[in-house]
Image (cartoon, rainbow, N blue to C red; front, top):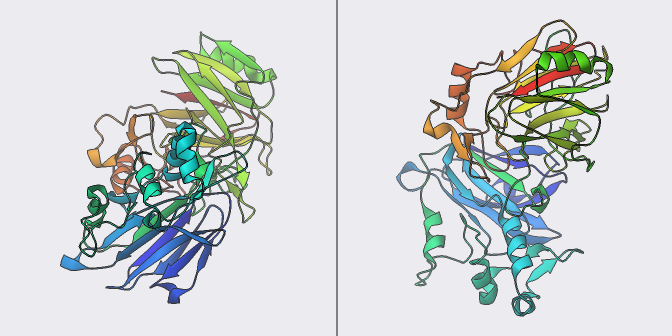
Length: 450
């Protein structure tokens, strides 16, 4: 029997009204959680996000409809207060919806003149900062529908489309296209808090680092993607607006010299930029999910630093740090995941993960003389199949997530390709076990991005 998985990538529980499935009973998906419900063959229904009791964006569709294909779409005709996408599991080409719906609405609202805001004030609901948190039903307010079509929102029904003799809007009508046969569906929910402050751009990516004590060289991955304490993924928010703060030693020479110098600097990371261009790197500390386990932080980096090409720095971090470092703030991206003070041995443990995408090679190494290294140095983007790529918000073409997030579900082409050219031993590709745990007794690791 087909099924529908709903993934909530936000830091709060989200309630959904369900029609046609689940005995028409509402469901609530916990923060950074997932829930799966049956979708019987030939069945139709809708899953509607609720915002303080108001119906919002919805995923609606039919399993195994005309021609043996699934038909589904995302609609905001009764309102919106979050972002919703839907696709067939493992087939991102079938994706519908706008993963940055509320970010685009907020950005357009900030640019709107007083006259426009005045004409829409009864239909656009604002938070204490004057930013939209919910909009009413466009189908009931033509002026609202007209404005929404200027915001850059795409991939979903804004109006009712072609219906009862009304030709509808061509962009809406495109949403009625068929998927590829019949398969399980994957729905992803996010909200405006998932932005980096740059409206229309995601701040990070979704995956889950569930911290567990590292055991002698073994790494335990949670089924919810990611790891940290000894290995373990995570996704969420922690705050510390120290951009590039903390003790740093800059090295334009040998990274080994820097690693030796760093031995007396306390816990941290010897960070190396092996590329031919200057690059900013961001450190994200994990947060606690609703289940009390570590979850990945996508919104609030603890600190950042910028390195010139072929240079290195020692980045001082608190011993309690459990999380990751990545290029920039966007996903998909390669993650170097680590903790500095594991509860069982008080040493540092880390790995490289491609679960939230790949924007280039990376390695993680011990600095205590044990000479252990994980990750890879090859440019695997060259030669990757077209189906494995995703265009990131900054325009970069990168390999898509193998685990899924609010931008869409797992990308099977990326999974197959990365298993072939990298392998689970060198980097986490789909969770589970088998990836080398890189341990360093001195609470310091070296991370190099290529």
